[in-house]
Image (tube, rainbow, N blue to C red; front, side, top):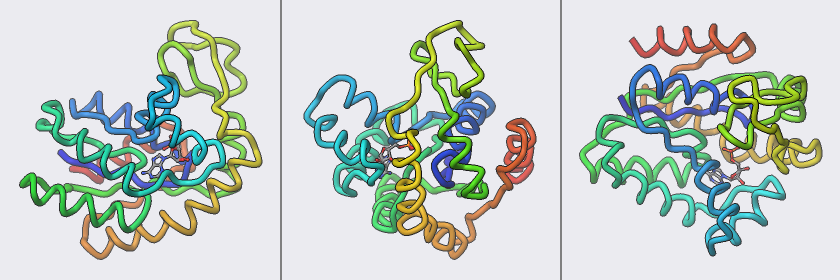
Length: 207
Ligand code: AMP
């Protein structure tokens, strides 16, 4: 199963992706995670990406498309994959579709997790992540409920950056919902519900 996961930042894509990966045993491709790892490692890619990420802007298409093309060559994607946070522009969506057709693969579904923007601002500014295991929690978690690791706030989850990320989403990424509707792949799911309810709705739609 090859899935594209769409939705505004903070819609719950990362949380749902982790559950889908466990359920369907497919590869998780998160461009945000790849970029954050490059920033942490201080690679040339990380140095370039950091300025965009800190401002809540998109990293240039050419950079991100290159990353995803490389990642799709890896063996673990043969069993299926979930793209989390990619594509984010029409250029990326078109590049993905041509890369997949070269590889003889198809997208089975584009799942759009829909959440009200005001709810997103609240969610993102309260979001905290575990340094050790990546668990996604919130400001109420003093330590990680999964592994007792230290929780931290992403730099781009600060209120000013969150607003900009939402504007960028509306302008560059929201049009992809119509793009995938046009190719009959779109599944829209209400993300303003408890995590397990959202997940149940996604699974039902994938059957
Ligand atoms: P995310 O973890 O998906 O919210 O991504 C964090 C940041 O990484 C975004 O705000 C962008 O700066 C960058 N990023 C992640 N995925 C993409 C993408 N597909 N295109 C451009 N920039 C991206």
